[in-house]
Amino acid sequence: MCTICGCGTVTAEQREDHPHHHPHDHGEHGHHDHWHGEDGSITFGAGAAGVHLPGMNEERVIRFERDILSKNDAYAQANRARLLAAGQFALNLVSSPGSGKTSLLVRAITDLEARFAIAVIEGDQQTSNDADRIRATGVPAIQINTGKGCHLDAHMVGHALDQLPLQPGGLLFIENVGNLVCPAAFDLGEAHKVVVLSVTEGEDKPLKYPDMFAQADLMLLNKADLLPHVDFDVGACIGYARRVNPQINILTLSARTGEGMSAFYGWIDVRVRNATQDVTYVAG
Ligand code: MG
Image 1: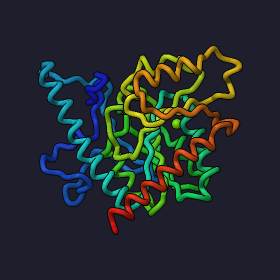
Image 2: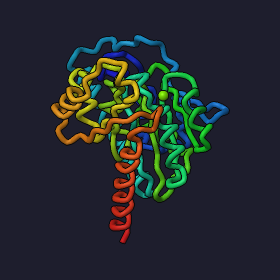
Image 3: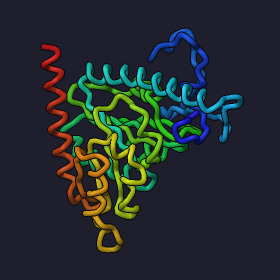
């Protein structure tokens, strides 16, 4: 269950009742928390919505929540070590539904695929629509369906990593489930969280959902081409984001027209180069 938002969904982690399992140890125990589709998709969570925690008082729920997050952190550390060893740079894209994450990825992949080996993990509750859109660009994509789950967790991402080519200087985009709340709490092993906010949303979202903006290293203000048609105060929005996270980088762009995208690519370039140097330094 995700007690972070109280949505009452059962997480993949919770469905595993093996007390001694380790991250990515799927050997003889044969976990049955997920199944694979013919298109390579991975589906988690067929449980009924609205599952609650019978007999748990508030204190136990808090302990349970801490337990889920510490298990997630262990999986995230394993993912991070694996990505670092492979020299693969991973970004975790988070936003509300409809901010334009998938369109932004399609544009970025088209513009960057000559420079980087790109792979994508797509998170949604249902359908492989987004992974299909990504695969149409020619790069490998794994769809994770979270079922009733409201976020990706590091354990799910570990399964998807099993199926993707990881390589030095490679770029992995993880598109999280559209949700500005729960994905903030779940480290997936990424190098950075990137929060996407579109100008068709309220400019006060950083104040309303501060955790997500506090966790992100970059905010992309998307759909800038629509600014003439909407009442959205860019300056106020940037001020709110900086109030929540003074260190956050902010770029205004439009995935539709391509305006401002090169600044995003520059931001990626610098960090991939630094990450690659870190690996060389550690290895040498
Ligand atoms: Mg999407």
